[in-house]
Image 1 (cartoon, one colour):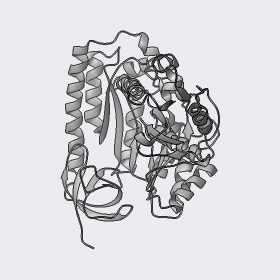
Image 2: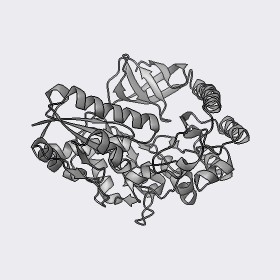
Image 3: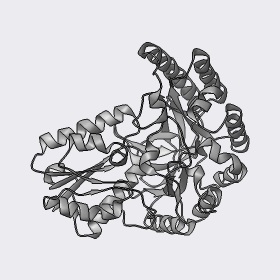
Image 4: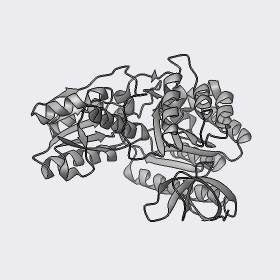
Length: 426
């Protein structure tokens, strides 16, 4: 039997796909890279936004049409968030919920034999130090906890990932050590909210970062998304941890709106003043910090004044990376009961913010031009060359280098999303 796995969405879900593959190989089930060779296809779904939902729905339907003789299994967030729709579009397919990955081989074997198996529901099983299969030996995704402490009105992901479940620091460090000894040069600490780590276990994110960064080897650590409200009580220690020379000068701190009223409506649990205070502390202590943030455009209660507050905030804090999303109702989310703003207003606001985003990010990246940067080469470019990361986690295009190495480059050009460079001779 041969299985083809395709994973969508966030870094955490990509790691789930690696765990599925690891469980299958541990049980002597072959993984193939060509879908035509497979007997069973696993679609590890993302369901965070409506366009993603539509993509997942179309993909599952298309697979059933294109490969009627192959067995199909659906995993990922869709399984827990929208089982009714999944059952409707695929009444004869099996499921693997994101908390049931250790049962992947059982589901595959049963499905291959003609049974319909649906493993769902929450568990406290750890996703650390379990078999994983990745096609990237240089970047290791390390899940530090699953679930969150939030109650954001627009979110449906929390229905799939459940309450917070932090994994022990000792276990996480052990997996990181093994990855580094195996040749990994970038450790990505990931979760639905890394700042929530340890709130249920009495451990701290700052301690975790330091313990991983203090491991032997030449590597970098990237810390994943942190919810502002959960960083408030540990700001100084997290700053101290990120100042470690092996940790990227990078934070992903989603604000979602520049309006306190909208933040309250979203039940975000923080204010704009608190957010700016966190950012100010980080930038004062880490001058080369890359700040990434997320903005939801057109939340149902967002007025013109609220939108202008968001524009004002972005111009003030100038994030180097801005992820924009148009608000759309999500199944089960509290805000789904509200009336959406008109498509015309949504389009206008989104277009305006996209222009602001490009201006800010290009301006921030321009500051790197003519500077000398020591960069870590992490992957091949899709259009040639290689992609490296500065210590501030900004992508740099480099030519004629070796994967997994640190090299010195001169930045020659900047765009709103990446830098171009020339290699300095040794």
